[in-house]
Length: 358
Image (cartoon, rainbow, N blue to C red; front, side, top):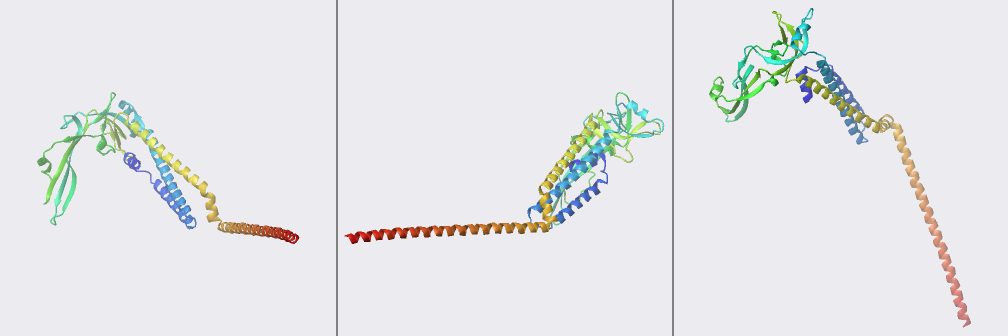
């Protein structure tokens, strides 16, 4: 989510074709899940199907988002980069009245402002944050915080390098302008802060803090905007009509931003490939089972009957073999008994003859 908000705020709104694609993909996969999950005879299959659906949705979202970020990064990297400001006039000759460019330079002004930190600036803003509570008639306390502007001053300024300068118009509307301001804490008496603040009954200040935001002279900035000539023929950088007006602080910040976007795009595409690979592996593992379970139910039942019959045949054959073994044991016992009887009769006859001889 961080990268999505970052892209929208820095580059502009993502193209509208992505959202319908993602929604269509999600609905199609949910439909497959509903159809396949109708038979709950195998409790493991619905879980596998849900996991495959979620991974497929994740792969689609990651791929579309990565592709869009990469497309935007490539678009920004292809914008005309003006290395020297003196050459900016060469691009605005003939029929070319405006052109999208990337310009870099340091902040300068003919009439700089003095901020309370003793630094020269072209934009100074003082804000206060107040934490307060209000006691209602019922006795309940409501705690709130309020941010409000104390004062704001600005002077005309420009970007300059060793070769020339160019004016910047409406820089406050550029995306990222608040990030390039330097913030300093201020010690302002509470009476000066609250003299213009309308206080309701039961209002009580808990704590407050003030800070000053300033764009200092000499700060290195990079603008992505439209280069045009004003009525006097001077070149200036302004907000494009159909694109976002971007500003970055620090030297080489624009190149770092583009490379960072491309790296993020590759990460998203890599995640989409990982999710897709897992889905394919799950499809291979459970594909045969899915086909036999849902597309060939009669064959499945037939195989069940065959398995039951084979198991019954095996059990019957085992019972027959056990009966045969029992019969063999009985025959052996009978033979042993006959042999014992014969031996006993012989011994009795011999004893009888011995007694007669005596």
